[in-house]
Length: 347
Length: 102
Image 1: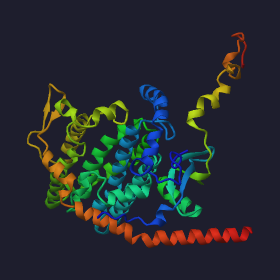
Image 2 (image 1 turned 45 degrees about the horizontal axis):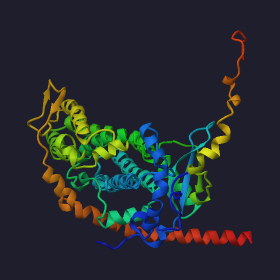
Image 3 (image 1 turned 60 degrees about the vertical axis):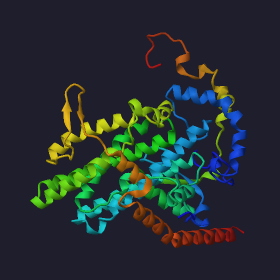
Image 4 (image 1 turned 45 degrees about the vertical axis):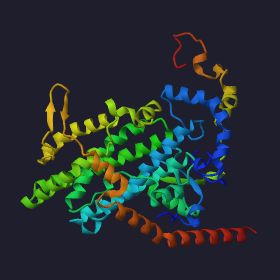
């Protein structure tokens, strides 16, 4: 069973951020006693399920990560949604609608997984809307041309798959199961993006230039999607070591980024696209491609809110939510009227 | 930017657990959960969220609050009665090797 069984449904849902926090602390002793089970399960690479005892930090880490992941899917509908009315053919429009609908679905799988940890979806949406929780900074870049839809599918969804495949083996069962569904669907996303660029690169000079320009703009932000460096000296600051010990994360940011670069270089060659990095070259000794320095100042700037589209994304998201309020209210009114009728006929 | 924008209406939508029969011959299996104001909407939302690629031929939705579950803390005592009855498994029995179809 999923969902509302972690905490009494009548209680405010996120115990850590309400008055219920003190009460939760009182259970700390009980959690300590059964903590052995948690450690044994993690050591044996078994899955943790919603009603199992788990350390509070594990729960909070997962809530933060899954919520950010869900928010990214929901905000991720916007850059491509921007092109639905202007897709160059009916075929492309149908594909784009299906893809954007998938992103909504992915958000819902993930909110569903987060709720098994005792938070409420509405509360997570509030935190997205008021800026208390983040989403991937990649979605704060604009989609200026049709080729951007190709570059997003190929690079952004490509990077997302690289990040998400290891999450299918995440120690938290509901998250791992959601990721299996997501990964199956992402594969179409990446291939349709590649196909858009493949066609453009076989088109007119202007179309080729448009594809190249999109790749130029999306390459570096895609590399940033794996997160800041977390190996060598950089390993000390972040959460990577703890997340890996808990089996939430399986590879470091840097390892995944390297894998991504190694995978994309031959694909770019096939497309005839030049990746915008003069330092990109094969390193025989390492058996990997070397690549140039990433502008982490830009990453932090965009993450903190100063990207090209941060304000626009949240304003749009809030507006969509507010303008949908009457639909939710109508559904509610219908449901309660119907429930009354049922009661009436039973009596 | 600090006021919550979700109204009380949405918060009161109950949680539904969704079960999908993948194809004929298989039983319904749990796939996830969703919020919906009533059973009909839960079914429709379940279709849109969990069967966009023909993953199902039938859907059940059950209010999460109506599910009764065993407690993980009691799992040892709860499932204990089965632990010491190895004679319930065919491999428990010693039979001569040259008997066919046994």
